Amino acid sequence: MLAVAFLMRVPARDGGECHMMRRWTFAQRVGAGVSACMLAGLLLLATLLSAAHGLLNHTEAARVALQQTLLAGCVGLAGVGALGFVLHHALAPLHARHEHSEQRLLLLMEAVTDYALCFLDLHGRVTAWNAGAERLTGWAATDVTGRTLEHLHPEDAVAAGVPQAHLERAAREGRLLSEGWLVRRDGTRFWAETLLTALWDSRGRLRGFAEVTRDITERRRMERAQALFAEAGRVLQPLSGAREVGEALTRLCVPEVADACILFLPSEDGQVRPQAVACADAQAASRLWEPLLRSPHGDEVGPSHVVCTGRAELLPEVDLERLPLALEHTAHGELLRVLGVTSALTVPLAVGPRVLGALCLLSTGARRYGQVDRAFMEELAARAALALDNARLLAEAQGALELIGVAAHDLGNPLASLQLRLRRLRLLDVTAHEPRMREGLAGVEGEARRMGRLLHNLLDLSRLSAGHMTLDREDVDLAALVREVAERHAEQATAAGCALTVRVQEDDDATGKWDRLRLDRVVTNLLSNALKFGHGQPVDLSVHGDATHVRVTVKDAGLGIALGDQQRLFRRFERVHGDGPHHPGTGLGLYITHQLVEAHGGSIHLRSRIGEGAEFTIELPRTLQGRSCLALQVSV
Image (cartoon, rainbow, N blue to C red; front, side, top):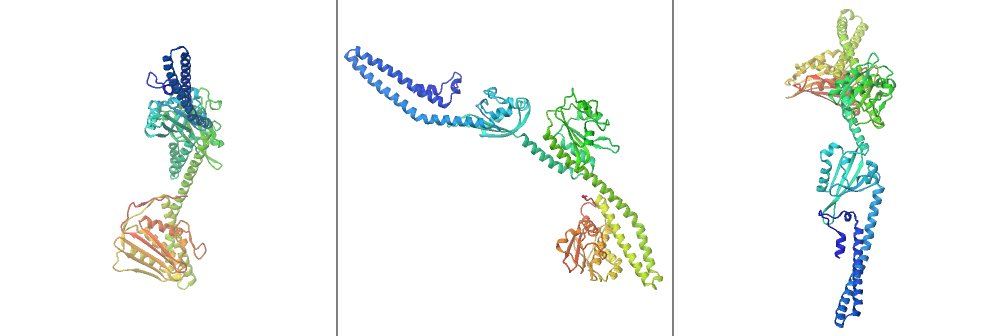
């Protein structure tokens, strides 16, 4: 039994097990113990045989003593034999199971090739290394067994003590899941997810660690791509100018996907020139401008060629001592030398067949661009191209709206003069004896008024879209304003066959700080709509004020508006009853009305049912809250 214990654990001089015993498996140790028992039994048997031979040559007393010794030896030999038999039959199944477990573990480790599996001792030295670990890292089992895994970590991580800190944390917490850069044997890096698990024996003592590692570089790349796409959508879409989009795009790429990023756009003279530049190194940024300001030829390799062909150009490895012949003596080749570029990628910014520009990504460190980066950046460039195209369309639309505003403003004065002359002509006595002339002049005057409202609406639309509408606040009596508008439309109401009524309670205070001209347009648009769709039914205007707000209601008993159409009625160019000679219009009146009411901090509500007319109510606070300049974000 002492031999079994000796073989199971042999202490070394340094206080640990000897090196040979540490490398023995449990099954080998059990086998050695059984063999020791059998050897002890054989030695005891030899001793007994020698004692039996001595019985023949001794005296009677000596024979009795030897017989007793022989008897005791036989009993001991039987005990050793029984012990060996029991140990063999009791430990044989355990040995078989243990051997089977080791074989299964070995097969499992060898079968898993997508993960790196290894076992570490207490000090982090490798004791087992599978084929997956060799495939993933490039290191063979013979190269790493007995060594720590510090050579798999970047130098800065080793200097910071990261590997040892991971072991200590895993020993303290039981397991540790971490992500970070690891280094292969050839020096390339990969982003790894590592699960480090502490191994404990039945007595709760730490025996070592098991480590499982997998390469998640592509998953991290996809996550970064999704995050970058989301950030690009958030940053680029609200911008309204090509320069703003370019600056935001280059800042987005540095340092996430490049050390330097340049956006090239064609100029009016056809030359492809830099529009926006971002560089992680401020000193390098000052050096790159000289080659950038050179005008490249149309067939030169680089951004100019990408704009011309619409095809991306990829330089995975750049050897500055041996540049390709196509880059020699070119502006792009000089740029690569000046910055010390190690890899470059230039992708077109295209919308359909149109190429709007080129995005050049430059790496000056360990980053290397490949086909995956090319596909990723082409998708990002396509989104940036849409943002650039939207900025161009928005600039053109704003220019058109400004032109509309200028035209509407210039047409307003002669139209007002025309309306005044028509009114004077209609009031002359010469028309009293010519009914047809009087009716014709009244019709022309009505069309002139409608044209005037249209011009005012176009002018307001231009200012709203450009964000340049300013409210001129002053003390306004809304009741007096409503009466004035009603008086101006008295003849129109008579011509439409609508009885026009204005209701204002005598004790109501309807004054507030508002823009008189804008509110005049609001009431005019609502009253004109009521007369247009009133169909000869009465039209009522009422004004009511309380302590904080004043409400104006315009109610008619005409066609009415379906519930599903009431929300879209306040959108631009939306019409419910369609076009035709009986209901002419552009769909701008209620849109402008809604915008002007909201600019005053108020609200507009509609109550209507088909065949029962419509009731519009505007509610205005007496004091204008917030800014007096209305700036709207208009989508084109």
